[in-house]
Image (cartoon, rainbow, N blue to C red; front, side, top):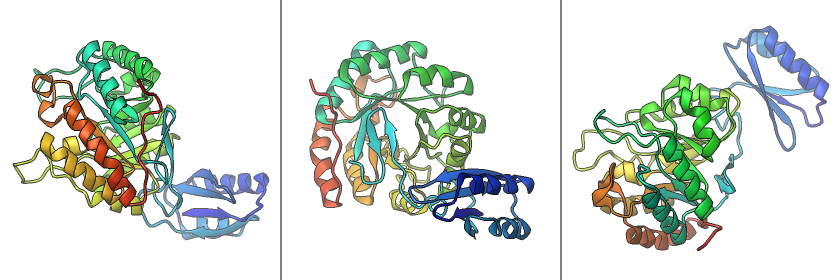
Length: 345
């Protein structure tokens, strides 16, 4: 249930409602708003609990919440959430933001060169993996903490905030010390210990949809992070596994407007993983913008043929610049501007 307080309800009245909710073994989460406070509740609610709370001073109404996800739901928080990655706002009416960079951090030269190129083409953030989950244990699995050092150097060089993946709860502190946004990859979407761990720190979390996950499962995974207190969650549609063999995944473009309807959280699109083919990245990226995505996640490499991971879906610098020349046109067509790097060479 959602307890909506009256305008002008005192802090004492709010505290009394929170205490009464706890008496029923239910967890209350105050949600202060611009005009009034609401209190979300998590646990098994009953008609008795709802009636008891609704009769308290300062309570305007008790609203049942039908969605299994609560804090992620528009039923609980109707206004769009804006999440900041560094100084870059994502969501609501903020300009569409593009994060771009290599799948894996391979060398300092490769990473810094890519960061400069994507910045100059208009990217607002740098993405790159220091820790990489791979299907085979014999594939390149990232440079680890030395990769984080390279990402930090690329940020210092270009001014771009960093998005990078974290794989285990034990790595969260180390990654959070460097990253501006922690990515939870598709394979870890339902790693609940990891979701709890990133929820207990304050950096934004980019949560990718699992390769076989439903929209509801994605939102329930987001709920783990939100329920731990970290409200800075960004969702990412990156394609799902189907019977189709010509693409790496099937990019679920209808998930973007659906998520925008169900949740207040920002939604990014990853057409690189969504297609697995470099020549499909640009058209699917533009389709995602037209569908209402708040931003894009694009893989870019100075020499995709020599990339240690996912070269076949990475854009060259020239192809990325060509895409970035078109993105603002589609964004404007759907009533949005496109964000660009605030720092230029």
